[in-house]
Amino acid sequence: MMSGSVRVDGNSLVLPGGARVRFVRTLRLPETGTHPLPPGLGEFPVRRVEDYADSVPPQWRARGGVMLPMYLREAMWLSFAGTAEPAALQVGVGKVCAISGLPWSSRLSRDPQNYVVLPRQPWLDGIKSGKGTVRQFVALPLGLGATVEGQVTGEETWGGIQLQAFALTESALGAWRAEEARKQEAAARAVPPAPGGMQWMGPSGGYGAAPMPAAPGAAPQAQAPRSMGIGAGGTMRQQVFQDDRPGSDWAETAAGRVFVHLVTPPDWRRITGEEPPPSPVDRAAYTRAGLPWFDYYDESAEDLAPTDTLGAVKPAGDWLGDDHEPWQAPGAHQIKPLGDAGKPVADGDW
Image 1 (cartoon, rainbow, N blue to C red):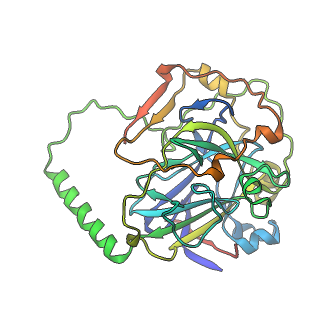
Image 2 (image 1 turned 135 degrees about the vertical axis):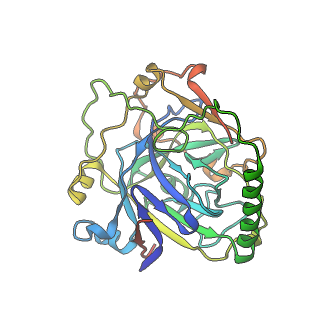
């Protein structure tokens, strides 16, 4: 089934209404303690499955969507920068809601909330596992029961990441546009601020992208199993904001959806003929270089309460063994506080 409502623009997915989703490489956090937001280290390349129909498995062709390469236990976060109109976005990991821990649904839910609100939610780094915290998205093989899907459902059938966007109703969108017009008129009358303010923003957007120091003596990555899903990594401070709109403001049916397949680097090379990104950066080298981490808190928004389901998900290390990558905590001076077109993607059966 072909859906023209989701497009690929470079390495971004553009959803109906202009919501732009990027998949950002990042440092994998230790699985003990609670940490600031890790940096963005560039985008994952994104390719349409249908462009490689002769080299992907039949199951992938049936599900459609896009694919991107990840190393075993590599971490990512989702950036929602560039949203043109408000949207409610569901995020699934193996068709388990990353916000509520409930099974994937074709409808929005408010109790518990099973979506994030754009553009209020600027990014999402993991599953909503605690009050004011999330556990990092990390890539894990299917078949061990270690993914969020495996731990929550007892099965590993889907893997990957699922996104589904809902637009405002016609009346709610009209009211929003009128309010935006009033804001723009007021801004045009305002005196421009004096120069000199500083905002740190990396070239890949979100809460920053920084150079990747090489991992000294990094061992070659062993080939991971082909089927991959999302597991839980380390804990970081991050709010998932409660929707303050009436539920009736949102459309009852999704405006667009996409299935994101996670591909091992060897399979990426075989399927696309492209070289995958280099292996993940050594996090101790990053911290020693004095590069920034981030902290973001919005006192004007209400953080969602975590659910018991996702709070009980065990981290990857409980299944795959301890994380032996060295850890050097960033100094206080390294943590930066932050203020508040393309081709259509084919959809399939999932």
